Image (spheres, helix red, strand yellow):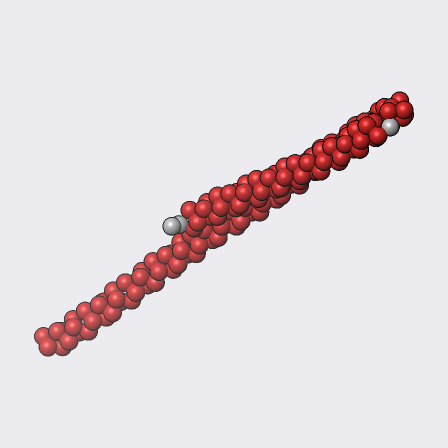
Length: 165
């Protein structure tokens, strides 16, 4: 697996982790909302039961109880509206936080990829430099070999000349 493939795999894994984290956060938020709604439903049920018992116990207080029930209903509605506004704000903040986290992770992945690319470029440049140095070294060795051969040839020629004389 090449460095680029490893980097792509890392990016894919980071995105998968971010997606799973976001799904888990959304699941937890939905669970909190459901629990809050269940709690509110239980409160509402208990209040309705209390009102029913009061009506049964004292028919003479029916009008006062109806007014009380209306007051409770309004309060409950106001509380529910406030809770709904609060839940919507929490959801909005959660989505914003998740978006910012994802953007940060993507930026970190982009920077890591740029660094990886830069490292590859530097490695290629170093390889080219070493290749050029090696070529220069080989050329120098070949020139030295030619000089040695030329020197040997001259010595043989000189020796041959001495023998001929």
